Length: 265
Image: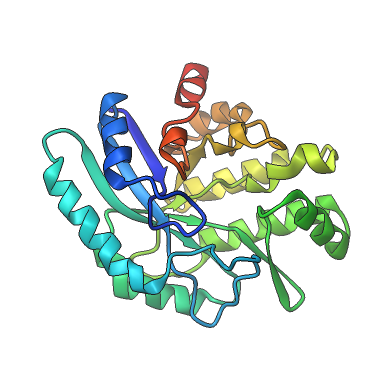
């Protein structure tokens, strides 16, 4: 089975207008047999998106059309490829109740889903940690250091794994080393091996899967997968299930670096 479990869509406000059919046809041509569209779920109503365009999540009005369009495509392409309906759900500290209510309401539409951390809370404000190198560096100064920012990220990911988000809580944890996205911009070498292994071990203990995410290999200041490929031996040793995800926001990025991750195995 060739599977890509992390794909965005024309419903992504910070993505592209590439159509579902373009993604599906490319997946079939690359002999993928199983794909999940994981559009960014709408953010909690009373959460203020800190990004300049406030475009981190899907508009709530687009949620049902997204599900309906994918239900149609599932049937249309059933002979050629398995299409799973999914969402990438943000874990935001302080908004667990709203997130659970959202999943209780819409979880029955989902075949698959990812739980990701993009927003970090510091004191009484939130920042989108993967928005820009400048934003990351400014935030690290507020927190105290780059290393403290890394630890804040990993602490938040651990909270997401342990959070009670109800029966529809996503079981796959998205890009758990996303905090590396700007590592070549800030230029500090942080030894976070123990923290990443801790997260992977807790994922295994709690029955989660890993989003083995190739997008970082295309990011100018990252140049590695999330998590880095050096952790794959550890994942195999603890028998942690993982699913390849290209995290594509355009058709061009679909299945990016699949051969790198799978030749490494």
